[in-house]
Length: 602
View 1 (cartoon, rainbow, N blue to C red):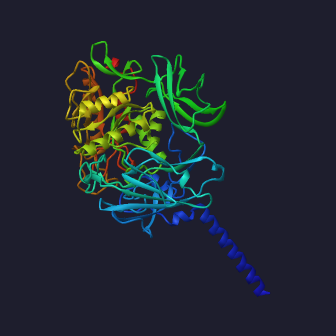
View 2 (view 1 turned 60 degrees about the vertical axis):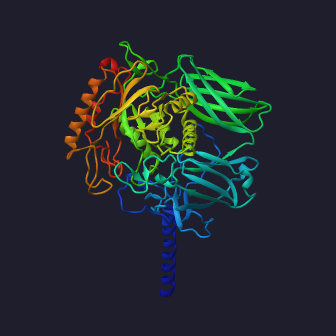
């Protein structure tokens, strides 16, 4: 009798243990056991929210959304091998995509270097309902020279660290079973001539840790045989219309394109056969601005014989940016026909745990929310291009963007050609975002060349935005603004007849916060303070001086910078975003860029 009871108890215990283990595995999947961040540096609070099964699950292309897609982020195999070697037979371990291999969140945190090549491998399956359709493989960002194989077949290669790219992999897919995806990536960092921003092999001062390989979302998309490849949206508030160019891939016979615009209290649509250009009238449109970031929903459809064969969802903002004279004859930056002083930070876009990639989409959004609370209406995205989710949040929350092109050496004709190619690709990827109001091809003379020609190239390629040909230093008298840098400043450049005067960088007030720095000692700032109170007083005083320059003709100012970055401690926030270093209320009260009436009140 005792034996029977004991066995029953033991069996119940076994069942309970199995049940508890099952719950644990449901809560923390097997992938969690194969990955953890590499310790050693500070982390953001969002690092704890990274799910290795579904990192960055958000749709990565907000301005052209389709229903049928598959996210390939997660744990991949990786290997680091000498550059000349062929595909490895064995891999070194697991890497969490889409975090760069040098980052803590990748689970690897190893340097690759120009003498090596980084390899990736993963398997995936194609949903059954994608049969008979084309399959596109998208990479939102890979740094820098990438070659891709699917099931042993090379499907394409790409050079560029900041522009999204795609391959049609339909013909390389097997009819059934798992598909095998392999990438090789080579990146010479600062030892090459390609655009690379502030990455260096030996970080120091204003130069940061190198980034190699995949650093944002990889995904699959299912499209019909004839499909919408891209859309180009141009709002025109003067003509009260939005113009949409629909680029189609495949056989357009018997096809038409349709655009439908919707917003509360408004709807409009138009169709066109035999042409890919559409216009939708927008009478009395509600305009987009930082104070009122109104967006219109847009649906673009491709029809054959009246039946929808492809459809994408998008959005746009009605807004106009220009330089013109105010009532005093001074050149100002005008948004929607009104003078608006633009103020915001130099935004590096680096993270202590993900380096080039924020740990989560919520973290990306947080930076924009804090800048809004600090009274900013603009940011200058500094020598880096972000994934499109960042610009989505700027569109949605209301923050204008000056977009830098990442700098490179540009010493050879090949390097200059590559720079122009990547510059145009970046514009193509981002040109629909209403938040972007200015392109900045060069910063402080880094790789600067053919300034007038590059300015004309950008103005011709995108005439709807301003161009700042060179922020600081080597001004060649071209483009829409005269830009100077002054630390700590502030200062105003001499006024000109045709260009607006802007302060492209100033400030740099530093405060190292113990427990929230990249390293404990030898941190660096343009000016250093020891307490939050002293930093706040200095910041408020700096903005008071800046305010006096607005009536004199200053049209915009860029404060250095959003956050600390590695050994730099000039940030409005600590590098881990744990703290706004100034008193938030006092800093916000000192800001003055909240409305289009700013200059009039000055």
